[in-house]
Amino acid sequence: MPADLVILNARTRPLFAPEGTTAIAVSEGLIVAIGDDTAIRAHITQTTHVIDAAGCELMPGFIESHLHLFMGGATLSMLNLAATFGFEDVRTAFHDFIRENPGDEILFGYAVNYTIFGDDCRPDRHILDRITADRPFCLIATDLHCAWANTRALDLAGILHGADVGHGSEVVLGADGLATGELREFEAMNRVKRLSRLKGRDGLEYPGLAPVSEEDRAHDRALIRLAGDYCARHGITTAVNMDGNPHQAGLMRDLAQKGEMAVRVSLPLCLVESHGPEGVARIEAFGDEVPGWLGFGRIKLFLDGVYDTWTALTVSDYPDRPGYRAEALFAPDIYNAICIEADRRGLQITTHAVGDGAVRAAIDGYEAAAKANGARDARHRIEHIDTITPEDLDRLKPLGIIASMQPVHPPGSAGLPLEPTITIMGRDRWPTAFPWRMIHDRDVPLAFGTDWPVSPISPLYAIHCALVRQPWAADMPDQRLTLDECLAAYTTGGAYADFSENRRGALRPGYDADLVLIDGALAGLAISPDAAQVSVTICAGRTTYERPGQ
View (cartoon, rainbow, N blue to C red):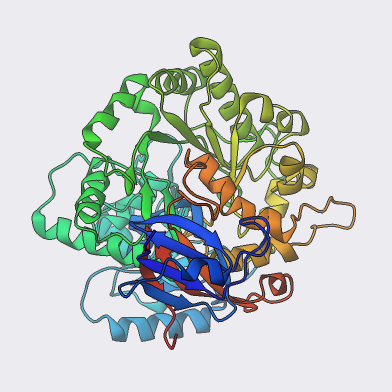
């Protein structure tokens, strides 16, 4: 068969292709043949685009199993403070940023560590006012579950004197009765985010039902398109989004229908407790899918927050707060009812669960759905699983639950400090914290992602973090995976979690031509994150990224 695209002179690994495979032929977006160079040259015609891989490793495209495209696109124009610590360095960075962005609009810094101003100095409005008091600005925590605003921003948002922001969120007040500047969880954070050009439309729980002007829709589409291009730059061909609403569905459909998306997208409907089980029907407002490029069929629920804001739901008390275990964002009966209704409709359920109490509640909900509707190949997912009890580890496999995890999240990895997280979490939870090895060894399906823009999006960097992770104490288990196990979690595992294992995640005839060429040695990622780089990304047979100088 004549090929549109042929790649020659590549390396492959047995995980993805038979031994001796060095070349691949692609036609109309599908892999039509694999083999050695001699065999594949037979598919070349005068119109075939031929790529000499020059010894690069050929792999299936990475499946990023947990990210936030719209918000990620928005952060590309924000100040990245992930590697910035200390007041003077932050002030210098922000003053440079202000000069680059003149005017009076609110400015944002993101990827901010809780210890950015020191181990014992949590950010507050007084510190931020010393950086700038006249221009509203806000720092967004690296986990996206907390933010800190200066006095000007709090005043403009109408929350300087506090505000009722609903169940599970908090505008933290000081002894003087005024807001300290710390905003915990989405509804509190969104009060300040609404001051921006986006007016909170990129928020994780934005309902997306209100009319939006065409000018704003064009602005939002451009951000999502940028995010898709950013994914392609890192070898990603499928993006499993973790927030969604009718507004996003319309934007992504517009882009997909015009051929302007560099990645395939799975988009869920995000629900909160007040929606109840009848809220599941809101997914009908998403409209039509775009076959091969944009799929729906999922709901997303947040059962808790994160440890750093004491909002992760736990099965036992926080060590520094006797009698306190945080508050579930869903009452158990409502959560279970939503799970039952979504499962009845044949939808996949995706639940954010960081604390061991939230993980248990998620498992209980999935178990309730199976009992009510009967067992099926549902592949309901739990996102994060930062902590889990030993007994709940053994409940995952029998229910067919997918563990969707992020190798860049453990404290001590990806530039994250150990403290205060591991102390807030408590030592008793460490043995089963971020338990990749324990989950893998129980034959629980594992899918990797980064939660971008919470963490850097690069799958290669995430794999490096997974390979070099160290236990938090000498008596703790080693949760690392092998290189091939990590690669599988980013390909075959991600495909299985997204019900596309018969089309993606391997180099096989008939599969989608979603490919990546890797320059360098993947094995070297166990030493350095720079040991390998993405050279070329191909999605549906179309080159979506080519490293400059190729």
